[in-house]
Length: 91
Image (tube, rainbow, N blue to C red; front, side, top):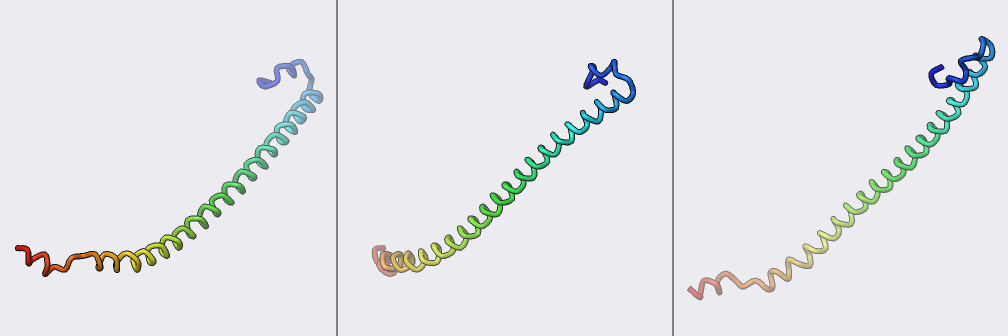
């Protein structure tokens, strides 16, 4: 009665019919909300899976980048480094 004060003047059978109609409307609304939440959950799961795959691919890409960088950079460092004996000859 608190939700529908307009039903206060109704008698037994009519009041029960109105309550059943109200319950049916609420069930339809709740089902629509449930479906919306299921769709949102599915979309969130798909997004999470995509992001996980992106991160997994990034890890592999970074490993390859580091591997190649090491092979390119170390020889350059070794070529440009002054031998230690030359440094000590100055003193």
